[in-house]
Length: 300
Ligand SMILES: [Fe+2]
Ligand SMILES: [Fe+2]
Image (cartoon, rainbow, N blue to C red; front, side, top):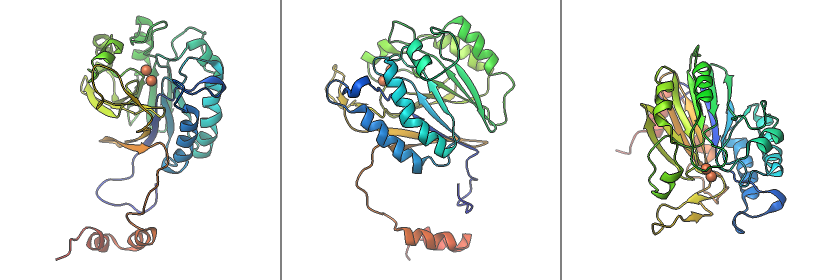
């Protein structure tokens, strides 16, 4: 963040670039023969360089590969690791229902036995990020087992100052799409028990290919839209409608007393400067009271 502070809030204590559902394929294949998910992720990576330059971590909340191919995970690394290195932020990989644990683990060099859940925890500054594997091998709906519940309980012990952000592919929420309810996270009660005693500030999910939010056990749940394609809830039900549009990622800001998120278009669009750079530069040079006069005062 810049040295000049605006408004009543300080700069965020931690920033997470949250992307999801990259659905990469091997061999340059197009998803469903039409969607270039590789090109979309390459474009996303370029946008991350500027939009997420202050990120403390990059979170990818699952469905990294569409068919669980090892080459697709290698591609995800090839695209995202350089931008992560330039930002100086680690990448947290979470598994989704389209992922296959052995290939994902090998290609991304993640620790553990091939078929073990891909659970992880890291700390960035004063914030802890815990990724819970909500995928169930052989199924598209989500859940977790007792071994993971015990692991999660331990992972949430000794809270750091900013608390924990939990990443899980399947959002623990009721879904608007009735069909997608078949593919929901089915162990909500057990998860609520484990999280009840913890310090989780927010849950970051994907899976639904929509931007959305809700609450689970009084914890905010934030959905990142997909970088690959979006689910069009405006389409005629009961069919599911995929659109090669609304590609996005989120910037999640964690403060001592608040968590917020912003949706960022993942692909570049033609834009106009609604406020030209030279005007912004002038505002930056003003004293706080002058800034309010110049920028907030309505003409009388
Ligand atoms: Fe997905
Ligand atoms: Fe999914």
